[in-house]
Every structure is written in C-alpha cells, then in structure tokens.
Length: 229
Figure 1 (cartoon, helix red, strand yellow):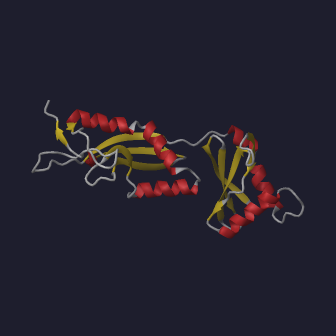
Figure 2 (cartoon, helix red, strand yellow):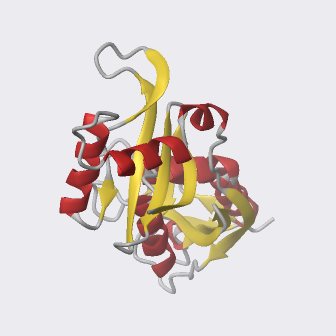
Figure 3 (cartoon, rainbow, N blue to C red):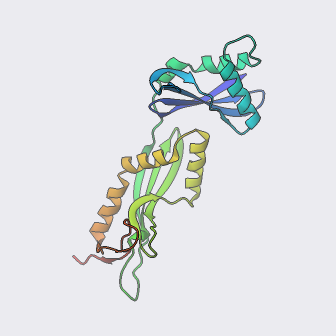
C-alpha cells in the first residue's frame, strides 16, 4: 500500500517521513515528535496529527486513522499500522538530521563606480553559496538588505528571493517540512557568509561608516571608495 520515500530530522525533537500511497499515486508527509502535547515534557516519539499532502481530503483521512489508532473500528487500521511500523519511534531516536553541505562560496562583485562621485555601493556585492541537502543541489545569493530609510542599506546579508534556485529551495523546504529561515541561517553560519563579504570589501574598498541618522537603527550609508593602498 505504502512506499517509504525518505525520512529526515527537522529539529532535535521532530522527524518527518515522506510516503507514497501506491494505489493513489499520492505523496504525504507525517510527523513524529517527542514533546508531550499537554505538558511539554520530553517523552517517547509519537505520531502527530500533522499530515501534509496535496489533497486535503487525504490528509484528513490519514489524521483520522492516526487519531483512532490500533482499534478494530478504525476503517483505515491497515494504513495506520503500516505508517506506524515502517518507521517507528526507535527509528526516530536513531535518526540523524539532514544538514546542508557547503560546496563552494564565491564573492560576486558587481560594484560600479559612479562617474559623478567616484564612489561605489556595498549593496552591489553579494556572496553566492553552492550547497547540497538530501542529495539536492542549490545556490543561494546572499545580498545586503533594505531598511526603512530611503537610499540606505543594511550589511546584514540574506538570500535574494527572486532567483529560480531560491524558489526551488523554498519549494524543497515546503515539501519536506523544513523551516526555510532556519536552514538559511545555518547555511549562512556554515559558509561564513558575513565574514567573506566583509573581508572582500575591506581588501578592496573603504566603506563610509558614518552614522546614517535615519529612523531605522540598521541603516548604513550605501557608499564606499576604492582602496588606494
């Protein structure tokens, strides 16, 4: 009835398992968690009433089967038992998390000198990170971010969300029940993105680090000049 596609840990306390229902040609995702729902204490891993699928009706059916459990009146007891027994609580205890593996880190310097001022903009420099996770290959382009002040920028880097690779990665996280922002931060730390960006700028440019004086405390002056020494 079911084919176990893959399992992955999404947190210290949570493991998610992707199945294919062979007869329906329908994929669905179930969650195991070891935090007790009523008191918040650590306990044995148990199936949660949190099923993801493209079909709402099918999600509700699986959640109902999990909720009723191993009783004769459960109309989907065979489905429940197959989910429970193909990947059980002990498997959850033993399962290691899926982590991104950094393949390459590259500076992308698109800074162009303003012909009038002779200055460059640090916001035109980004860090491109190539990585793999669960045998899937992605790129994220970490760029400077905007602030509430017009013309200012923040040197706190975050991936550009308009690329095809970002969209693919976002969809991958959604399908696999992964927290997108948590993985983005983990990649940023593992690839040392902020360091690479600052090191490149300090080597080639002198940034205007005067206080911006705007309404946003994160605002920085988007100006730098070419280093002469």
